[in-house]
Image: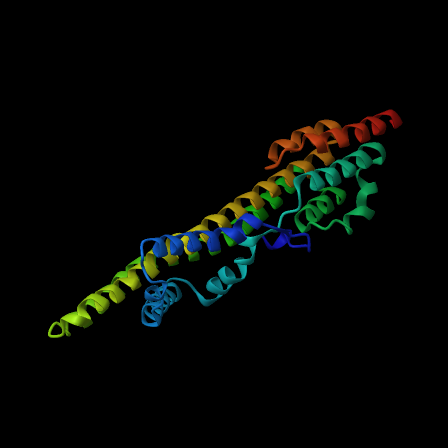
Length: 277
């Protein structure tokens, strides 16, 4: 997803509200049942679950992969892709100019293209590479970038699998401590409650934070790969000389968001270009 970072990230308000809302409602439910919120605050349980999960993740993945996953967390809360309508508008503008005056005439516009993937494809088209060469090169890039973007979801998914198990370990350790104090019945109830807090931490962190983060990052990576496929199709269509209006309609099939307003905007532009021809 790094290729899509160009300072136009859109804040995802639903992702930002999801974790506070889910955790808050759980705590409210705990309070409504008469449970003390303070009983869920256990430093020992947090250290066991956090330390054990981090250790398991670091053993499963390299330091670089873990750091990559941590850096990717920002994309849970912001969408790094520009609106598809904007990308299609630029591609259609390139296609209009190329169809009117030739592909070589867009060479001056390529350097100003903000998307590195699209910029490379247009550069290859301007340089006279064949469609098979362009497709092979860009498809290789798509596979390589998709493989890199898949690392972060795998890291968080693995962490989500380890956390509940480590939480159970924490619960068992707590119960061992309780068993050591069987001679004092007054300590049994609080001790058992404290022991199971580790399980709550492990299951809660896994299902409310880690696994959802993995799912969101995987969805971001899927959308980015789909966008690159759209850009590849656009580059090949520009080189082929496809009608800009037809191209805009064709590329809209790749878009996640509705593009009817964008197509209505682009249609007059394409018609004016055809009139000039």
